[in-house]
Image (cartoon, rainbow, N blue to C red; front, side):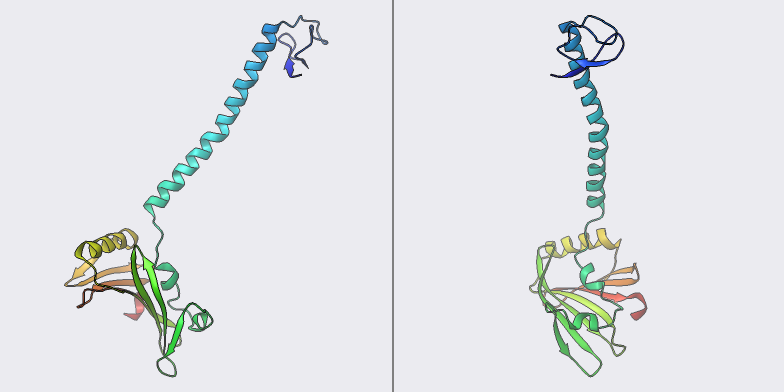
Length: 196
């Protein structure tokens, strides 16, 4: 048994009723069908009010994500300027003491944009992380290097180029340098802007 509304007085009644108990209006099978169709149309209309905004939010989210790709280096350069103790307890990061006050931290085989490389982070005498680099494990073809540079341009803005050195100035509070090594490898270096 479904509930419908009387076409005359809008009283809610059973779809099996022959007459409206409120006003006595005779309920025909046509009235029951119209009421059922009206409810379906109302549900469809109500669902559209919910579905359309949800679809729009999803579309905007994906457009935003396409315009602002995730920075694969951020996990590492975010340590710049922080006390080196933050890395001392991380079991995934190897530590080498260079001097009493200077340390090197390494993460091996970090895959970035399809290229494998090693992350190096260094602390200075102030015991803060002041240098972060990623060096590829192999020589890159010109096409592979160009693809990396394009992705970095998308993240950090237009670069300046000097010989084999690519520079992105004033990215947040950092300077980003990338260079082609003599052996064909590729390095990306992050420095705090005032440490250059």
